[in-house]
Length: 104
Image 1 (spheres, helix red, strand yellow):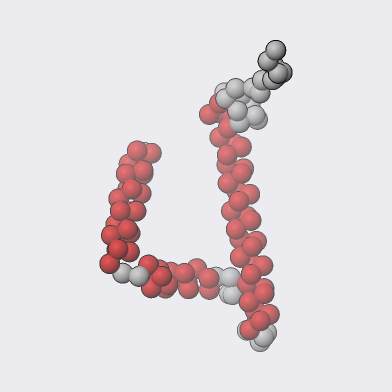
Image 2: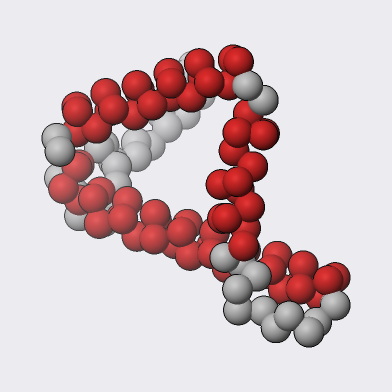
């Protein structure tokens, strides 16, 4: 799909969600999805551990997951930066300028 169509679909989706949340409790509507998402962090943790230990390990699994997403985002932005700005590796459209100093 082209970018403009993607943006339009996202906009329509947001409008639909807002309409739904205007008539229903958003926490109730999204609870099954949040439970399913959170369950992935418990999948590799032994069930014989205490609930507190399972929660602690799931917390670290969550942190690792979100940190890896962050790293992938940074890498993607770095790959796009040269093409977007025409200057390899800087990610800036214009080079920084020296301050002329205080005006006399």
